[in-house]
Image (cartoon, rainbow, N blue to C red; front, side, top):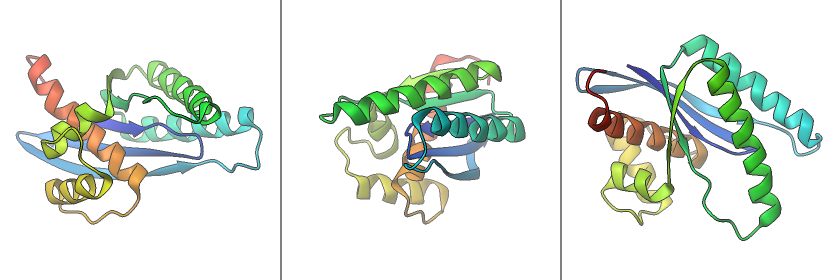
Amino acid sequence: MRIIGIDPGIEKMGFAILEKQKNIIRLLDCGCIYTPSSEHLSRRLNMLSQDLKSILKEWRPSVAGVEQLFFSKNVKTALTVCHARGVILEALEDHGVEMMEFNPGTIKQAVTGDMRADKKQMQKMVDYHLGVNLKNDDTVDAIACGICLLSSYNRTHVSL
């Protein structure tokens, strides 16, 4: 089973392609899609869409785990991330990728066993699970969302 984990954002969107065979999870690709703040929002959304669609076309995941937006004190940032989430959801639908959403606490619980884990704890457990040493928080969050998806998908679907 091949999946994509996504940490939505407009400046940088984390993504991770994971594959599970038997009980082994492998990280196939990961990174961030960056859009320059000097560009207009419509251009940034188009860039995000094109890059994500390219990743989906290359890796052909069957399911996506997308982190839900948590309430932000900065309304302008929250609205911009909502625009990015819309583009992400449209790209997934366009490529026929089933989508599941997870709140940050659920993701943290699945990866660390603690709904209140901080960024360092998340990074340490992602590194432990996959034998990688990543520094980018958005990439780590996307991988964690993917791990959460694989954990949840096993419980909610009979056949993988």
